[in-house]
Amino acid sequence: MSDAPVLLVTGGSRGIGAAISLGAARQGWRVAVNYASNRAAADAVVAEITAGGGEAIAIAGDVGKAEDIPAIFAAVERHFGRLDGLVNNAGIVDMPARIDEMSAERLERMFRINLTGSILCAAEAVRRLSSRHGGKGGVIVNISSMAATLGSASQYVDYAASKAAIDTFTIGLSREVASEGVRVNAVRPGVIDTEIHASGGLPDRASEMAASIPMQRPGTAGEVADAVLYLLSPQASYITGAILNVSGGR
Ligand code: NAP
Image 1 (tube, rainbow, N blue to C red):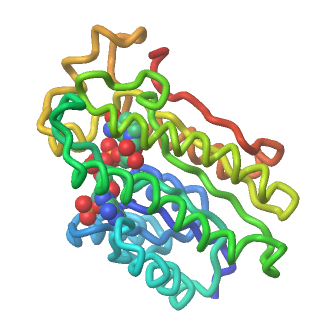
Image 2 (image 1 turned 90 degrees about the vertical axis):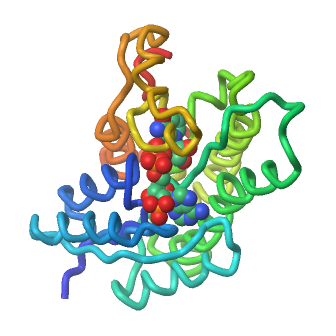
């Protein structure tokens, strides 16, 4: 049986998460590809990893449902027998709206998936990785957004606030578990060409924003994945509590 390290990527089936899953497999991780509902996309990522000689499984589970989260981690343990890293990547936007158009239901869903889900997943990971719990250490990378610093006025201030909370959580958690063998960092993507923009009603957002980005183009999922893979790697062994912008200068 392989003793290669095991990485769980939430929302690892499409977009940035899929690029992280594929890139991690190329670097020798065994990968648990979590998804919410699109089984075919998750299976395609697993098939591509397997075809390349890697090892992966698809695990269904909604990080916005507290009861799903322990089940996701239990499935990772059942299949691989260990966990070494977590990428808290699953996240959503919503339709562009001003604050005076936002409902309590919208806010509750936004924070439940983007923030509470990430915190609950990190808690499950720490219970397995931290030396305080008998673990061998490990690494967590949270996917934030440049929206955390820009605020996303007239588009989705709720999303921006959920990501700013991810930044604060990253700093606090990194200090909490630094002496227990667990590193915690975040990556802030700028405008990245994925399907998330269509899910927020703006399918052409990435190309339309190009002129407002200092590098004059949106980023790719692979470019974000490369930063995440670095933070996961031993090359980042003294980095914790860092938040890395991957945003073309935005
Ligand atoms: P995406 O293309 O919409 O993909 C989202 C992925 O997350 C899918 O695999 C989806 O699974 C999964 N997912 C969604 N809700 C989930 C839930 N409740 N539980 C588990 N999995 C869930 O998104 P993306 O653009 O790659 O974004 C990934 C992360 O980067 C998000 O946190 C996002 O906020 C952040 N980000 C993106 C950009 C950008 O411009 N794209 C910029 C800054 C930050 P299904 O296929 O099953 O739905």
